[in-house]
Length: 258
Image 1 (tube, rainbow, N blue to C red):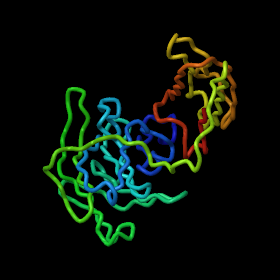
Image 2: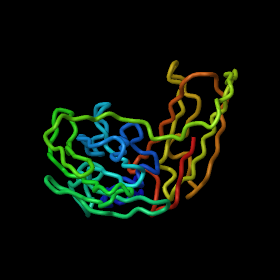
Image 3: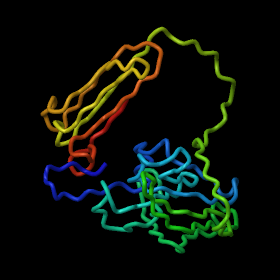
């Protein structure tokens, strides 16, 4: 997620909530809220560095109307060298192409937006509790998100919801399943392509349908495209980085598309 580097002391830190959402990181642990329509909610926000320890109802990213993004910026593990808003809930305002840091919240801090979405009411985001995990449990911030009220102390209501979609204008046409499908994988590497590896696996049989091993690409910023013909089923694409920080940013505008 941060830029790769071969120096051992290179800082290990990550993107803000808005950029993580754009990149599709933590999609399965994103909570979508619309406080004007849904009312107030009390949620537990897990540190994104503890993603692997989270339960299915423990988001690491909260998306409020696609405008404000909340993330627990725990300064440990692969985010240990973060410099700003350490161990706070970061509030990022996102617009197309722009992320603006609107503040960091510790326990009992709050962030307000008056006349939110022309509702005449104030959006209030308040950190109620700071809970340290353990025994494979994530660190948690309990947060109240509501209009004109703070509901700290009420029962938790975490439910991961799908992003809002527009209703179709006409009924969809009946679909038939083809006998085979094409999976196209496109990767633009960064300055350290030899660190990158990936596999495409049939989850039902465990068969590796395609792969790229470490130390198989040595040309900086090289772009590759692979197309695989597969049958109906479920397939898992997994990419790894030997340094552990992904492909990005200061070492080239890299990308992955499957």
